[in-house]
Length: 357
Image (cartoon, rainbow, N blue to C red; front, top):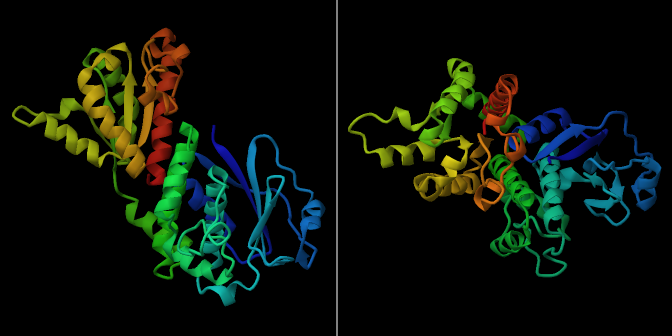
C-alpha cells in the first residue's frame, strides 16, 4: 500500500504545487498531497505547544503531515515531530545557503522519509559531524548547503539501512528515496532550482519512448497477443516501445538480443503462470536481470497472473505487487473481467510512461 504524505505551507516562498508534482512523478511507493485548508502558525517561536494549537491530526491512512514555515524553533532545530506531524523551519535560510527553498523542502522531505526507515542514528550526535551525509544532525545548520549539494547517504549509513530493511515495502520506499536524492543532488550541485531542473529534464524526455520488456512462456502466447492489443494505442502515441522475443530475427544471437532489450527496458510485464515458473530460462536468465535492474535503475515490474500457480511461494516475484492476485487469475475470470484487468494494466503502463520512469 502506498504511503500518503500531506504537505502544507505556512506562507513560505516555496512552489508547493510543483514540488508535489515533482515528488509524485519520481515516486512509486510514496504519494504526496497538498493539505486542504489554510495553515497559519501564530506563534513567533515554535514550541511543542505550537503543534497543539495547530490541531492537525494524522489519520490511519496518512503516514506524515509536514508543515513548512519561516518561524524559528525554540531550540533552533530545522524540524521536530509530534504525533506524525512535522513542522519544518526555514528560519534564516538566506544566511545558511544560496540554494532555493524548493530544494530545501524536497531535501527535508527525503530526510524525514529516510528516518522512517531507520531513526536509530545521526552523525554529530552518535558520531563525528559528517554534513555530506544526510544522516548528519546538522548541529551546525550551515551544513545544510553541502548536504543538499551532496544529497547522499554515506557507505556506513547505507549499509545500516540495507540491514534495517525487512520488507518489500521498505525496499520500494528506499528506491524512491535514492531516486529523489539523485535528482536533488544533480540540481543543487549546479545551483539550480529543483523545480526548474525537473521541468527542463521533463521537456527533454517528452518524446522519448519508454521500452517495455514482456517476459512470458510460449505456452501463454495467446495472452501475450491480448496484452499487446491493449498496449497498441500506447505504441501508436509513441509513449512506449514493446519488446518480446518474437522480434528476434533469423540469424540473430538470441541471448544477446534479449540481454540488450533487458538493459534498455524502463518497465517489464511478467505474464506469470505455472508454465512461466517452470521455465528454466526465464527463472535463471531473464528474471535475475530484471530484479537487478529494478534494484539498481528503478525498472518498474508489472506482474499479471495468468493462471493458478506458485506465485506467492516464489520469493523473487512475491516481493513485488502484482496487478491481480492468485485468487483472481485471468483464466478464472469471465471475458469482461479479463478485459478490464488488461485495461488496468495498460493504464498503469501509461501512468508509468508519463512519469518518465
